[in-house]
Amino acid sequence: MARIVLGHRDGALAIRLARTVLTDLAAEWPDLQFVPRTFGSAGPEDGDAVLNAVLDGRASLAVVAGETLRAPLPEGLALAAVTRRVEPRLTLVTKGSKRLEDLSAGARLGVGAERDLPFVHAGFPGAEAELLTGGVEAALKRLAADEFEGLLLPASTLVTLDLRDRVGVLLEPDVVPPAPGQGTLALVARSDDDVAAEVAYTLQHRPSFDRVRAERAFAAGLVGFAVGALATVNDDGDLTLFGAVARGTTTLQASVSGDAKEATELGAELAKDVRTQLEAL
Image 1: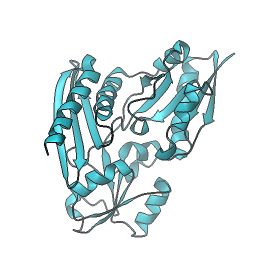
Image 2: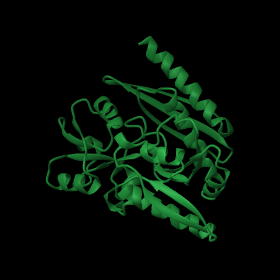
Image 3: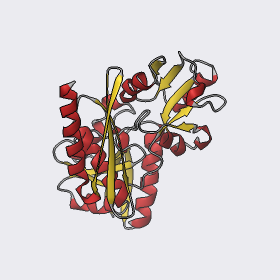
Image 4: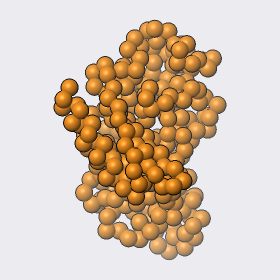
């Protein structure tokens, strides 16, 4: 029986996502043996370990949360498939279901990703934002102990961890934009591995794939900046991409629309326009 090694990162979320993919692929490919294997830590500072495992042949596919996948990918790797997207937005988690307007002027907020910090500083200038460590459960315990007035976390993370009841107010992109690819699961293969690509394609959701292609192209054109992006695709195949860059206490926002088939080109075009605006500041 041929074997497919599914590489994934460590941590509760990464393991849960990898198990879901393994179950789905095993149902579609009963003649293949799927083996999960952990590479690296749960943190973004070790984010390339699982990709390196695919590059050097220790893994056939990397199963990675879309928002943590670097853009652009290292040479020799390709985005083989993107699963159906769940809620991409961030959520404000509080005690007592507070709304944004209910937060105190100097609210202490726990933020799930370093990328989000500049957007929180720009959107909530009076708030004190702290980068969370230790995982979601640890963050919720700190919230319960009144160490924070609120947490800003991806809603998709809470749903995946069976914490849907903790999802609070969803933040619109013009308040705090989601990370490119947030709410999706990416399957990465070597560019020359047709077998792995064919296996991954079983889980492909084309509208989600196009949305992520646009968002990642936008991010790839703005390396070094704090970037947020969210694309939508309608039933006619029209794609609209919203992109944002945080700089200092301001957020620069822009959008572009076009054919979803041109998702990568649209993302690159919007990144070029935003970079021009940044250089003019």
